[in-house]
Length: 571
Image (cartoon, rainbow, N blue to C red; front, side, top):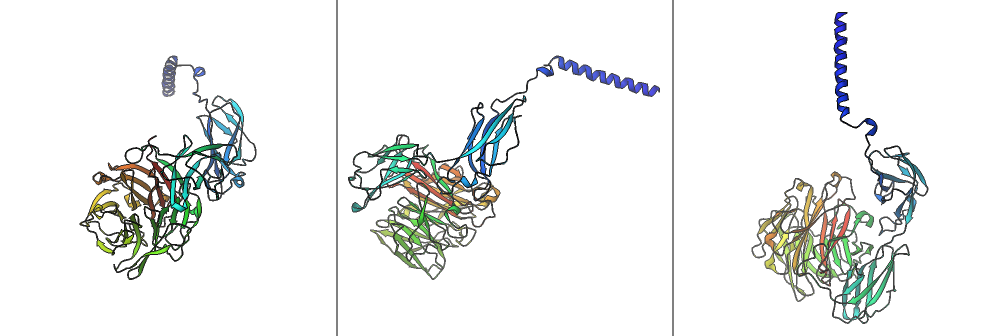
């Protein structure tokens, strides 16, 4: 008993000490009744609706951001079409949308959100941290589009073979036609926001655009509208290159939605007029889009041409189409100035290189002065044609040194498309390929290559840095480099890099931080499946009026096709 009494005494003493310390601490603090739980009065901040079926399963259809907490009804405006530029109506999906909400700490919604029928009122109780309850209603509404912009404007005078593309000042509603030519009787071609309409009508109509003329766009909803003044004038340019801050996304599309196969073809892009030509290089007929809006317009007229090699274009709206050619076969290059006119044979070359040829590139105007380069597969060799006065000279087989050997278009280790910097042979060439993932400059006199920039990242093995293009724009020379992803399903994204290479000495270091780098973008992905082919293409297109530079890209594994815009307008 004595031992037990001592234990009890010790325990009492310890409990007393603990209580004493506790009271001492509480005496310097607020009492429990006076402690306030921090409350964010903005309890509900965002509501999102996602598709639960179809091609866009789990993608966000619409969302609202809430700033008025006094409201008790929240209507999610689901766009009439998804994507906006398509004709895929969203109404059939409204009865089963996945709805999510962003709640502040300690707020709750009952019942829980999930799959809702947005054609009906869905009643919930929002409870604050203090227990205050509020009944709210969440529902949806299929909403017609409210955009009312002119996205492309050009005029043509067929008798003069004249085409002028308008420079669009969206902020001020002005479209400038940069020309000194007579525009008293011209045809108009224009594109507007998805599903919008415009007036006056342009089909079969001749306009006098020597004088200011008004065009009005009315949105799909029939309410929102905007009027543009089209006038002949010359806005001021910045002195060099594109104007910083003018970079913007034109559009981006799931290439699968356009009917483009996801496979192992020699993917390529080209542009003539306001058309972007997209070739899968797998024997299918290339499609063409409105290159300003991304709207699919149809398939090009092929005639006897074969696009198993690639498509490309010169600086004078000539589309070139070439076949893939094995050693000993004939490389045929066809040309046309219209996607609706069958191309004619331009060059024919008996392939005596002993190598396959799958890609060509061109600089200049094939009706005047130009250079065409055919890239031989699995080699460090090209074939060059110099064109003068519209006449192609004798083809020259050229062997490069110091650049290693690239792959082939049928090889998942990726080939390249050797690009001449200009029509001047002394300027040389640029090339890059997997898995070296180094941009090489080849001297035009010695044909010796020098490494310029390389991908030094830990993910260089996962990208094919094999697509590039070079164009001049407003006194500057730009290089676009596409690093296409092999593994989008592992969230390794493709990359686009734009460099100012007017001074090649600045093209040095790493691809992502070279002194020549002026713009970079990480590509979105529409694919989470195992990869097929780390292919794609990039293309730079200066506008005919000299005020815009457009950048187009295609990543095969990402299933994404898109466009960026830059301008040199001094705003």
